[in-house]
Image 1 (cartoon, rainbow, N blue to C red):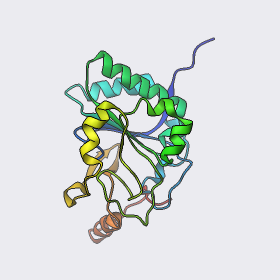
Image 2 (cartoon, helix red, strand yellow; image 1 turned 60 degrees about the vertical axis):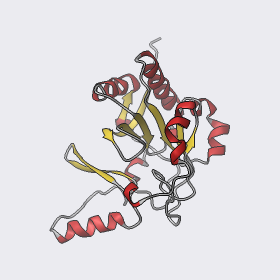
Image 3 (tube, rainbow, N blue to C red; image 1 turned 90 degrees about the vertical axis):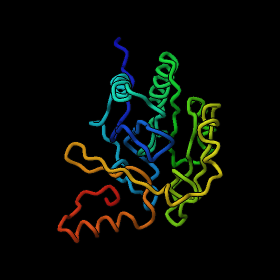
Amino acid sequence: MKRQQASVELNKAHFPVTVLGPGRRIGLWLQGCSIGCKGCVSMDTWAQDASRRVAVADLLAWCKRVAAQGLDGVTLSGGEPFDQPEGLLALLQALRAWRTLAALDFDVLCYSGYPHKTLQQRHPKLLALLDALIPEPFVEAQAPTGVWRGSANQPLLPLSPLGQQRYAEFVPAPLQDSDKRMQVAVEGGRVWMIGIPARGDLAKVEALCQSRGLSLENVSWRR
């Protein structure tokens, strides 16, 4: 019997990402989310979509190719990465093996809408392969107080010695105006805004576009 190749449903991948963790990072957004937080700006990642399934080996090959000139970290988001535990495990193991064999020091940061306690109970093996975690559901009414977080209830948790080294200084640091940055990328005829917008930013972007005769359609923050 032929062994089935490990895979994940992937919404998008981008490099370099500079607004979701320290340094120049690979960003991987997994497809599918069963949580569906009110006010989510990535509703396009909610629905499961088998047509977006990618072999972990192929995804790792892409990571190695785009990061050939240097890499500080990998950020996993979505969607909800922990809704694909088998694929996520294979991906994290592949990233760990690459890092070890190539003697690299990039870190792996993961976002999740699940409470930390839930992840500790259900997925300890996955947490053991991460360097840092930003868990808990997004709460639209709680504006963020820390860098890289969507709402004030979401902590930044270093999970490994490397995570402590890279993230400890950011855990207590208050959110500064300079931290409120977004990236814009044009890929495949679509415009991607990468990062965590401040409350009202997307409405301002839409209003500005309309004032210049540009209508935004099929945006990720509306269904």
